[in-house]
Length: 259
Image 1: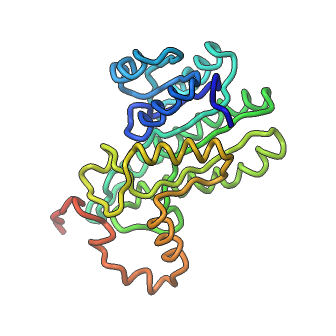
Image 2: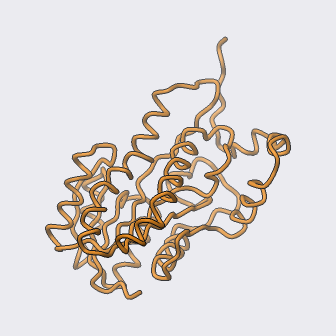
């Protein structure tokens, strides 16, 4: 696929992977629309890109998402590709289990993407074409100690995308791609050292190349993909034998519990 003059919108555009994706799209001479909560950062990113528009957008707010999609469609007359990267990663110790944090993660990681899908699908149905590529997570089939809120929101997202993909393609020629990163060196995980993490630049290349090749699922890095597939096959009793602290990873906050 040639990305020249393709209209590409990106949510979470100030994040590590998204910024690297934008650099690649700039060299591909795409028309780019970028969205995130930090408006000044968006302005900084866009100033050296010829065909780039931007607008502040909090993906947890339906009206912000609607405005972002309408803005892109009005400015460029169509939307060829949406790369949805916005998300949060927050540790979830069992000692402080609370519904508020779960709700916040679901609002951003799950509902934020639902809002985009709701706005994008009618436009792409009318076009009879389009690509929606969404960042989920590699371990989306089994829970990971300490990361329940993130995993639950991303597992729900993977399930939704899987449910839509075949029908959206057959009925409307809309490709839905699930992006499943393992560990990527971004500001989001800088406090949580992960062995085998790849750079944002390499992750962006894998994402853009996967979209160009028409992949349905984009998974990386390879070693973590293989390890995840193996652990997914383990019986519950064996999976539960994994060291809990190792599963949480370095940098996971230590919490003192008052009973």
